[in-house]
Image 1 (cartoon, one colour):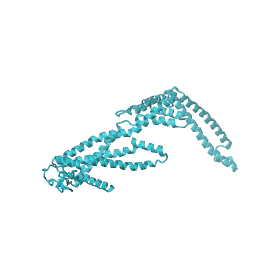
Image 2 (tube, rainbow, N blue to C red; image 1 turned 135 degrees about the vertical axis):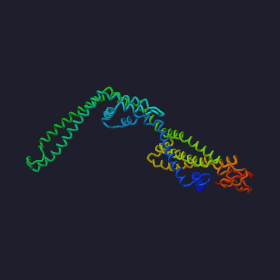
Image 3 (tube, rainbow, N blue to C red; image 1 turned 180 degrees about the vertical axis):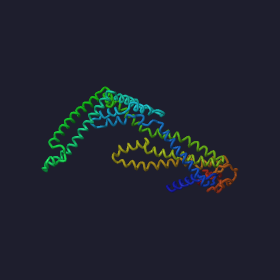
Length: 413
């Protein structure tokens, strides 16, 4: 079974490359082949560029819920000053820039920004008032003073340690390399510590004042409101779950018309014997199929179906997440085999193609028009008939049954 599948795959690949390198079954020269490859690469680059643009069209979860990451980080934080930290961040952001970011997130895209995030934005912007800016400036100044006193203490401690060693060694003060005696160093450190403690109290009071401002209280109340955060979190998770599928849908809508057009032109060119058009359309068909297959496999890594299966495995097997790798290793080849089977049966079905050509009195190989009883094609010399294995009369190549005895015929490629 495996050897048969590999043999059919090898024949299909050979057919693919023969159609990619020949015009009317005649090989093209190397210069023409190089030109075709350059054109293929140019078109392929533009196809991927178009796919990127169309995948950006539906609004992303981060753009639809721009407040989610910051809001979730605040709720998960265990830092003591997390209220002040998020208020201080609101004070450092330009309200106009913040508003433009939220307002422009949905421009030219399918979808809209969450109403709760818009409310979050307005409440956060309200914190950035003149009064709160003054409080923030006092906080910064006080923090700078604390840092300055701490730096002085560090310098004094370094001198104190060396002075203490000099006293232990009995070295006279006149020979000391430090300007401060040990007793004076201790007094200076204590004085600075008192100043630091005083300013830390002031700093705490200023942070409390900022948090108790009307704007600060409104913003912190929104951050703590489960009835607001829960639908935001749920909406973000659902959007993240479906976003890869929506992207694949739009990418498919972008590629499928191109594939259908290239396939139709190729079939038409083969029937009419337009060799150059058939060659170019065949290359275009291959170029349009490559990104589609690529995006399908890319989707299988992040799509909702595999995420769902991954979640099930995580629940059932707990820490044995490596089993998911086994599932992907087995699933991807099965899907790839399904794609090959579909292409063989419907897209590149030799018997369907031969049946249409026989009905139109065309060569079953090159599709050029021939007379009804021609045994060989005068254009490509391909034999139109073969001996039936049962009655040994001549019957059409690639058709499923003998036209004389009706016995099933093996498919010969």
